[in-house]
Amino acid sequence: MKDYSVQQRDKVVADAKEELSKLDQRIAAMQRNIDEHWEDMSATARKQTRKSLDLLRQKREEAAEWYGGLKHSSGEAWEEVKKGFSDSYDRLEQAVKKAAKEFDKEN
Image (cartoon, rainbow, N blue to C red; front, side, top):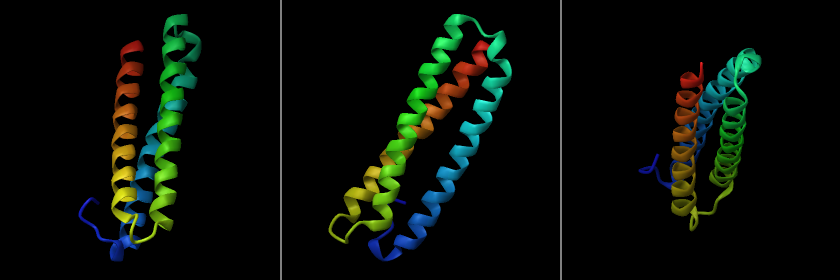
């Protein structure tokens, strides 16, 4: 994505939407798994799980804001918005991986 120019905006937006959708599916699957095991979790695990889910929501919202910027940015702002989305997506992806690992460790 970092190599795409403003003229390739539609491709970048489509790719970004697809990647966000994949992470959304992972987050939803993780949430279903957590819901299924909630009663079996210790109070400490529940607290950590809530904290991880809150962080995921925050990172997802940040990525969504940058995604909106991708769709509507001017040519002058393109590089900044593209980098902002890429960085926020990377942070979201890492948060998803970390949350999944933490939850797997608890179960």
